[in-house]
Image (cartoon, rainbow, N blue to C red; front, side, top):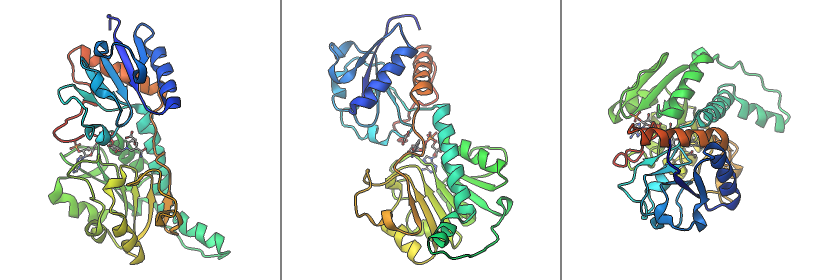
Length: 313
Ligand code: NAP
Ligand code: GLV
């Protein structure tokens, strides 16, 4: 990459903006990297790096690309100021996938080993012994076999789990039974004793974790949602938990974030809440990923995270 390109970081949170400015200046010391909230001559900026919906995007009139610090770009695509003709690139970063693999492995193992119910027994000073199933006797279903889902599916096979996966187009993944498309969703769900949602939020996937889906899972299944809050119909989950159809849920993402005070999920005995921390883009590796994406775009190639705006992810 030869020319002195101009890059602007457009992040509302000042602390977060500072961290990314520093990381990107370190990654491309020859470029001009500015804070997009107060940049002069915005029309001369080549690339905007943003997190979520960013105020003031319309000032950048000559962009070569917009790069999202998040893997999910649903909130970016909802921005009325988003110039549709400019390539949008979402974050694909080994650090992000690694964090998700650790989060999903932890919470799959927690449900697999019955940790939530053991913890309830401890609080009640009850000595209840149950022999947990072994991993090879348990099937985990992964919804979405992209950067996150495929890495998680592969790691779960290494624990010995039977792993089934579901995506829009058919994937091929060693050791994973794959399903594709809506018509194969029921067969996938019927096997998923622990269901992990790692789908992007699109018109096709909004509200997908609903009563109908819960009813198709094996009785007593657990659900882990680390994708987006709008995938889950909250009241349907509460009803399925009440009915015993679902035994527990781990939720990292919510329709309203932060999860409001007094929301029933906070105190529910069968729900674990984490505050949208399943995986965060690390500035070190994330800045390198941004530079790689830009370099590949400038070389006329299609970078790995190029968003298909039609499909919505
Ligand atoms: P990705 O690489 O784009 O993968 C998306 C996967 O979902 C693909 O396998 C895709 O199918 C599948 N898919 C999309 N629409 C579908 C549909 N209608 N039916 C069935 N499958 C469908 O995305 P990613 O990087 O893995 O990230 C996935 C999501 O995780 C993000 O969008 C974000 O919401 C969430 N996320 C959350 C956190 C967190 O901290 N909680 C962190 C990172 C990411 P194809 O393979 O056929 O295209
Ligand atoms: C986090 O939620 C992301 O989409 O990267």
